[in-house]
Structure formats: structure tokens, C-alpha cells
Image 1 (tube, rainbow, N blue to C red):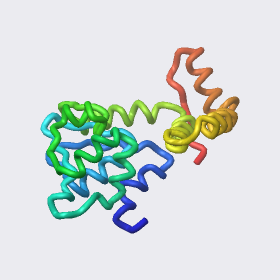
Image 2 (cartoon, rainbow, N blue to C red):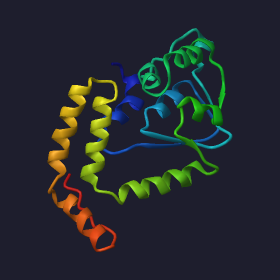
Image 3 (cartoon, helix red, strand yellow):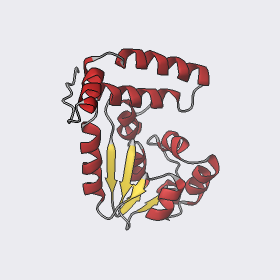
Length: 177
């Protein structure tokens, strides 16, 4: 790929979840970068558009790949062919955003804190697994699922999760990376 494709697409390769808080206009390149996040939380005033068609262009910052992962092909084509502006609630219905929140930054921070309170090993394994298998074969997905689960079972963080649950206390995870 080219350097313009990297910002949003590279987020997929990060081992940690990326959460985007979106408000206002999210058009063209900004939309393509936002779509690369694992989770997108939008304010009610958010408007989104694959605006490139207005300039006689197509999405070229990984937008075709991220749209493929989020919406049906007919929706991706309609948005790309028309440049139509989509309001936040419709964006959520289409799958462009995960959810709508009055204060997307606060919602994103709260979600990040929740995720950060979980085993970092399991979070990394979960992201790797979903990214690898979402559009792959069942056989490959099941094999990777089993491989990753084997790395987690009996690990220090997995044992800490079990003990914390049994002792009804907050877990104290250690990030091995």
C-alpha cells in the first residue's frame, strides 16, 4: 500500500484496541481513518460521507477495505458512488459506527478503562483472532482460536482472572509485553 493507506489500516495491526470518538463532520479521509478503529463512538451531531466522489475520486486511504469489514457491499457502493451524507443514527444502523453517545469522548474513555481492566493477553489474542478470521475460512479460524486459547490457559493473567473472580476482587493483571 501507499503512505496514505496506512493511518486507518495500521490501527488494525496494533495489538491493542483502538477506540475513535467522533463528532461533527467526518468526511473523506477523516472517515477512512475513523473506520480503521476497532470501535467507533459518534456524537448525535456526527455526519459521515465517502466524499471522494465529489472530487471525481474513490476512497484511497484504506476505505474500501474498512468499509468491506463494516457494511454490506451494496451500502459501501451506494455511499461511495453518491457521497451521500449519513447522520449518526443511520451510521450506527449501517455499521459505520458502533454506537451513538451524547459525549463520545467520555464514552470512549469509559470503554477504554473497562477494556484496560481485562487481561491484556486475552485482549490482544481476541483482537488478533477477530482480525485474522472475520473474513477467513472456518477451518483457519477454528485453528487460530485453539492456538490462541492454548497460550492463555494457565497463563499468569488467566490464573489472576480466575482467582480475582473467586475472591470477588478486582484483578491485578501484568502486561507481559
